[in-house]
Image (tube, rainbow, N blue to C red):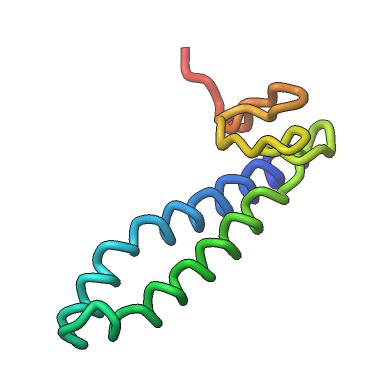
Length: 98
């Protein structure tokens, strides 16, 4: 059960990272196609909307151990590698090789 929850957390974090990483190539392509900053603005606003959705999706994932939001404590959103409530590590389901 914990392994499945941690996989869900990692998936949502990767989705957010993907949205962040595609910004530069997407905006460069839009500027090359439109040849103007104003022509690329709709692409920028679409990316911002996608960023808001990805951030909300990744922030609202719950910790499989304590049931609280993994990355949110109060009004603070922190993308740490541990639950902000019970300190469950993001890689707790991986076997340790000694």
